[in-house]
Amino acid sequence: MPESRIYTAALIVIGDEILSGRTHDKNIAQIATWLGVQGIRLKEVRVVADDTPAIVEAVNTLRVKHDYLFTTGGIGPTHDDITVDAIAEALGVGVVVHPEARTILEGYYESRGGLNEARLRMARVPEGADLIPNRYTGAPGIRHGNVFIMAGVPQITAGMLDALSGTLEGGALMLSETLGCWCAESEVAELLRLTEKDHVTCQIGSYPFWKEGRGGANFVIRSVDADDLAACSRALAAGLEAMARPVIPGGI
Amino acid sequence: MPESRIYTAALIVIGDEILSGRTHDKNIAQIATWLGVQGIRLKEVRVVADDTPAIVEAVNTLRVKHDYLFTTGGIGPTHDDITVDAIAEALGVGVVVHPEARTILEGYYESRGGLNEARLRMARVPEGADLIPNRYTGAPGIRHGNVFIMAGVPQITAGMLDALSGTLEGGALMLSETLGCWCAESEVAELLRLTEKDHVTCQIGSYPFWKEGRGGANFVIRSVDADDLAACSRALAAGLEAMARPVIPGGI
Image (cartoon, rainbow over all chains, first blue to last red; front, side, top):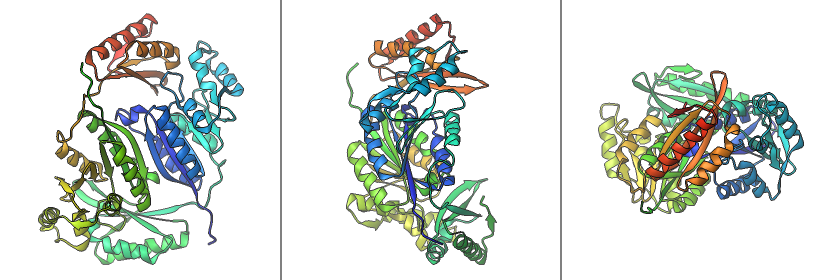
């Protein structure tokens, strides 16, 4: 198959609530999975506090290293929502009220007590930005160049990702197959290493677990080449069976 | 109360399985919560791939910025477990087999087929390191200076954290109180801002949610000063009640 350019992305999760352990992040897995479907690889994630210098540094490091940069969190109406201002500072632009965002919020809050100063904060964007629709609560996400500013609430981020689906340029899809095995990964480590070596487009990840009181592992084979992926998966399954380790296709 | 030094930590989550979206990370919240109890604040997290240069860069950036650096993942017996070698490279030391780790693994695997080459990989440490006991599977965690190398499997990491409890120097505990409210945070944003301003040791985080078909928010007040925390919490509750927004202590 022809070589295709690899598209990469980074994610910045913004929020003291993640760093305090109070909230379990769900956006990393959600955005990672969504990016995979777009043919874009999530290469790194940073979780930073609600702290302007920390956000500015992360944004300016990551937006030039990757094709796309996503952020989650900190775009609500309260005093601790500083993401828009911090990203504008990172981009070296001002903050303006986006007319379309204002119209959207006016419509959304018409039957909910009207637009107040706090709610109007959610219409503020870094100058030059476009909006990402949010079907749930009116307040839109924001796109500025290759930076995508999303909500912290996972359900709202899901709606914004849905609105973006198919609009970003990506490369070949990363394909994967999973084989589960009730064995210790340390028993089959050499088989894994040699099988990966024999299939140059493939990477094999080994993920041990404890379930129902016993140990096992899932082996995830990844490649952009469907034929090599299938061959690698067959070779690994045959190798495990030859060691009397029954294979469970699809994983455990 | 006397000023006390603030102790900070960073965490590096190592693993392609997190960046692909296949595995939902549980170590960030687990380690964040545990650090809080030790009087140490988790200030930033990075998720990086199973890639030596990415690990080396993250380790060397974060170990000098914070009192403590934790890593999770990549210390198993298979070819994709490269954390120990990458951290040794970052620290500028060699990799050696730790005699005590070897003894532990010999004992653990005595009734499980014996120590093979793959299993012996789990006794390798950056030169000069100490071990962190792991009561579950034998293979220990590793401490080298202020760098703590933990497992990727959350249950195993939990055991290692348990072994470390009370052994790290920390500062004043961050205390918190949560008030829940069936209101839109945008209705009370000004109250939140002013209440925080009146209580200089406190930070108020506002976390909106949708549950049972309606919106609400939890307000988390954090401080190292118990008296100021209680005063801030009372003031916020009174302010919400004055706006006819019933408060649910402890959060929703």
